[in-house]
Length: 165
Image 1 (cartoon, one colour):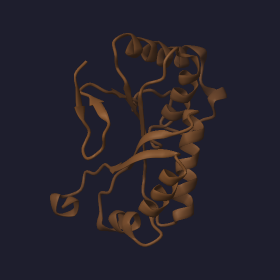
Image 2 (cartoon, helix red, strand yellow; image 1 turned 30 degrees about the vertical axis):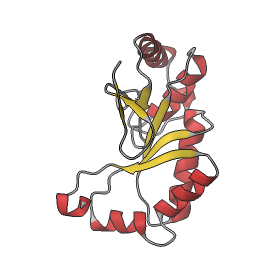
Image 3 (cartoon, helix red, strand yellow; image 1 turned 180 degrees about the vertical axis):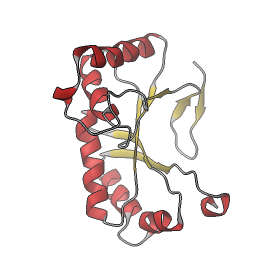
């Protein structure tokens, strides 16, 4: 597997990653008890194959339905965890809600630390403001970095280039 330095981080990111958007029974947030053995077994088989072939980066998101909870349960059964675990959390105007969402993702993924956390969908000026305002999402993430609960911070967007700049 080939690797490249990821942005300004010191992470060596594989050129192929395992995206978790389709690792889910449902787009709804369900309890793990509502996921069948067969549905979960598919996720765990893919994780084992990913390990076998050297995939070391797994990416998911809060809004990918049951993906986080299914990956978290899968991480409990595989021999080797991916080197880089990434999830994405949408911005929120209420910092305590955003922080709760991050903590729930850590819990669902059953990890001590999320290596990459992206603010998911900075698509509007309002989303950007929620992220960078005093006491906003970035400040929450900086605190969680100091507590070693997350590693690097990023964002995703489908916004216009003027918003990104």
